Length: 93
Ligand SMILES: [Zn+2]
Image (cartoon, rainbow, N blue to C red):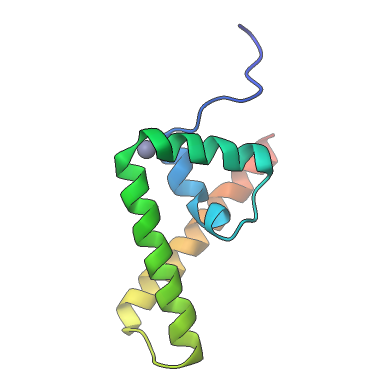
């Protein structure tokens, strides 16, 4: 087995890419891997659900009531980190 065209998603990759998945900015093949991982991994499923809620909160707070600043900063910092990490992974090929 030398080629691994569709290797299974692990927890760390899931965490890197959960926002892409939530935003549907992901290739269908990657979505399938994330879904497969979510189906098997309760930890990531609860993380995914929490991220969905957080993201909804941020969106809503932009439109009307402000979210607590620290929470919002944490979320934004996390999104930035994820974006940078995904980019550096992409450039490696
Ligand atoms: Zn997991």
